[in-house]
Image (cartoon, rainbow, N blue to C red; front, side):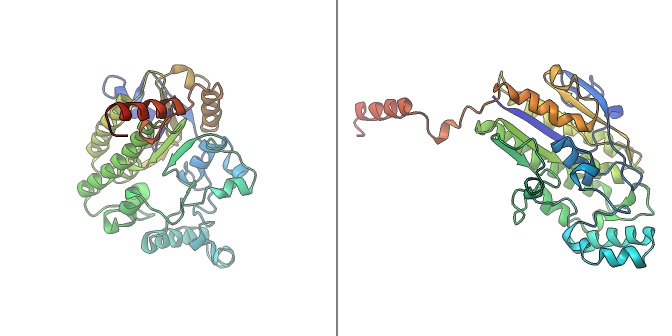
Length: 324
């Protein structure tokens, strides 16, 4: 019927426990290898394109340069000159300042990027609903609630290359609340996609626990609370699954003490979905294999009409009741 993939940025295999987090571990879970960027740690900017294509950053082309996503439209301007006149460390700090103070989002590469380069993604050739996937933006003029919240953080979430985790927050507790709202929005959209019965693949992403992890190094209880609350959110998605539906969780890296770690994770309601997933580069193949047999063909939204037989039955019923 439907395969739901939840991309949970920074979900760390060392921080989940099957007893405490049954919905983050599902029926099978394990850590997987990720890819370290030129910045010295795994990069969200690079890894979600890897997850949806099965290609390394060098192969799909969306990669960091000197620790900054200079191919972002705003940052691309003048980057060639910067290579000649600015030290690497200063380029990184300038890039961080621009992204913080201009509201630009480094993860908004349009979905057309892949087709223009002949790169296949998990969304190609099937009825799919991508929701907030970094660097796979279906409508570059539209923003959902998570984007709006991220752009309005102000000093609740500021880049600071000198801080632990690379970020600071003027009010970590308020920041936590906004991040969990972001997570709720994205998972609610995933539930709507699942309930519509219009898609064989629903793929929703949220950065909630990644953002919280970056500022909770001084208050680790916030990160633990985020895992517990996210487990409940995922449980609501799981409760909506039909008998033939499957749920797959995937992260791009872990996050401990404010810093990205070099191990990601997967979890699934069907252990066979993740048996052969050892790396972030294996996720696309697992999704393709799960959808290859046609078992996840969409059933169709019952509120958007049915086949001719159904329509005739409804018409006959209305006639019998005297409405036609």
